[in-house]
Image 1 (spheres, rainbow, N blue to C red):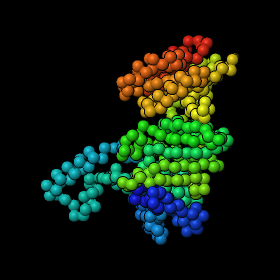
Image 2: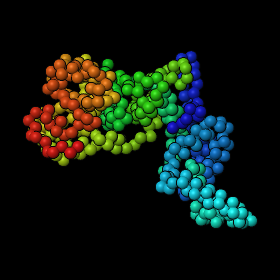
Image 3: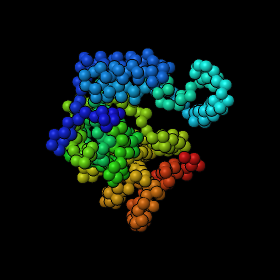
Image 4: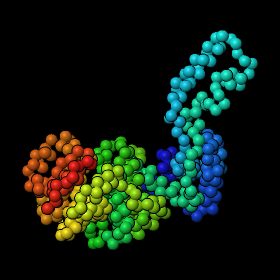
Length: 404
């Protein structure tokens, strides 16, 4: 992702506009091609060696900020070796102490190289733990145009680091696979979302717990990771307020922006605890079929709900959905409780992390007084077990010992 010093934006009044590059520009394609070739031919070489060539190449472009930005995109994809296995701090201290003793004795060789050879073997490096001494382990196959596309996307992602809320709008009749992927990425990035449908258009607000902290970019990073999947939609618009400096600025984007999603494998993006729960449920429960990518539910009055799991009885076809409220979900819990109490036949199960009870002193009383939660809800720690859900599904036998 581009750093703040590499951002190329233009401010017009209350709006901020990324200065995108043309992905078919011959000079930029040639620059990206040359920088990629250096990395692809430098496996086993040190970072210092590689950057000696690439920094010169990036500086040769007429706009230094663009050249450095393209190089940064390539550098982020390179994988270097780690030297954490050896305690180089202790190793250096040992060498320095030994050399100090020899200097005191005064019996020193004439040439510095001979002195070094007496202290270190030819393979040993005194400062091998410095970043510039790391060696290139792997460089994925990338293409020049792909690098330029990633540069444009990174311009937007870097701005999203400084926002706390992302407003999206897209058609409800979009490709179902893409809509499911959006739900998956929301879950993977642990983002909160509220949405409603108006005239076949989905109006979605992506929000999160870190939005209450003025100077936090943690939530912005999750938003930036999520955003590229939106560009898979055929028609969309996005808006947010960016607090890059003291003045808040509006960022507006839509499908005409030169942005290309670089995510390809939609199915793999799932938090580890979600995957483990789904695997254990399928192994231990035979009466109910689990769907760990249920997409969204259309509630009353145009409301859209985004459950984490769906369960369907294999015999009766009866369906239930489960929505989990973790420690960062407190802001949406009251709204969901009200919806369920007003729509008792929605068949939505609610799981609430006990950590929320410590954050809100009156929440426990609110839940104790909610007849809906008493019938369709449960508490858990960190992540629910299979038995938590089976206790609420009608006609379910006792679960196997809950190992999850």
